[in-house]
Length: 138
Image 1: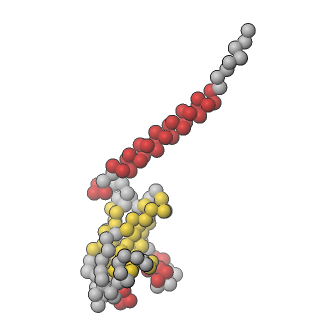
Image 2: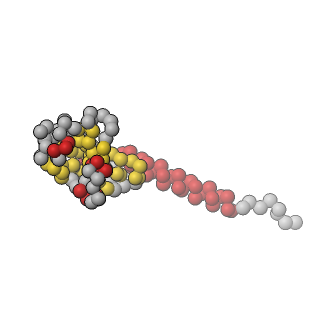
Image 3: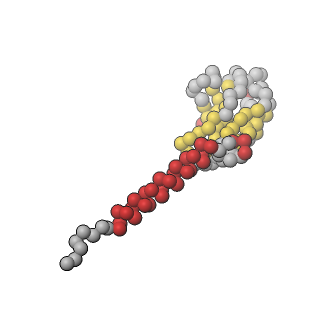
């Protein structure tokens, strides 16, 4: 008499693959949350330094892993309505305001607040913003 109660290996194999993927994702999440920016690993961080004054150079210091940036933007009040400098100045050369870590503050930014931001390596949807400097003095 044949055994008609066969257990398929496919569902067992499928569960093993799912478990392995879940384990890998859990380890990745733990590694991401425990990384320290000071050692140059982990998610990126951007900090602006320099004097917020027209004609002065400001610098974006980036540590950790990131995909692109910095991008520069300004706001009248330093809270909302941030305007990206690429669209604000109708620049066709995005290198003017993207990936430049040192910028000279234009006269049109007088009285405004400035910040920079970067994209993290693992997602275009996760921008990391710098400290805010300003208001820009004449």
